[in-house]
Image (tube, rainbow, N blue to C red; front, side, top):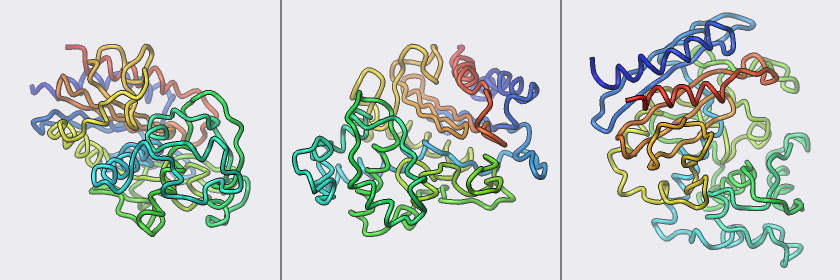
Length: 330
């Protein structure tokens, strides 16, 4: 049995247990190494209400905040490499109208690098979608809204703003931009894992973005990407093979973060057994990707843990850690 298959066998056990006990409807687990060896497996249900559909290895997932690293970080770093932007320049170098009614405020000093590493004073959450559904007006509102400055925390606002900067530079909205090989901005409902029975959209979300702010903006830099276990592993395999050209995604910005990604810290989602040269990221819908450059392998856990509701303890945090520890048990 190949190494990736034995890793998959070990790591699939906690996923199977979570499905069998009803904590999550279903999931897909995948492992790949830098030589291209990979193994994937699916279990459970892609949807439970109002119909029941089985989970498959080719099921499409709303990747949620994996969008931050699979799309937005990649585009921002590519533009920096091409000298189109300076990572240490403020966002106003691309969006001069950002908070332009007060030229001395702190928001106008926030840089691209600070947003990539979540080293800004923005609040953790902000319900932009409650201010309306006109995407142009919401963009304008966000660029002029005065946020109270607080401690640096993980905030979607960082990547919503990076997404707006990308839209300015590309001259088109995020949803009109190329999502990358194997990815998309929506999915066929017959082939996608369902997410939430949404209170304000009055339907079970299948193949359309779960994130409320991304939905209202009709595309954003922090969420909205769809993919399969194959497309996520293809991305990871490419990173394992070209690690030298992606130095910034491995370069620390803080004790917990690199450019866009998380790095290992006590209690992090990748478990305790990965090497220090591991990066990872999770998505609210129940997704995650971790790449260990020292060991030369990566793994992705894709679940629909918010189906049919987010208001339930799915145990996704200990599940992710258990999967990571099993992958790296050797």
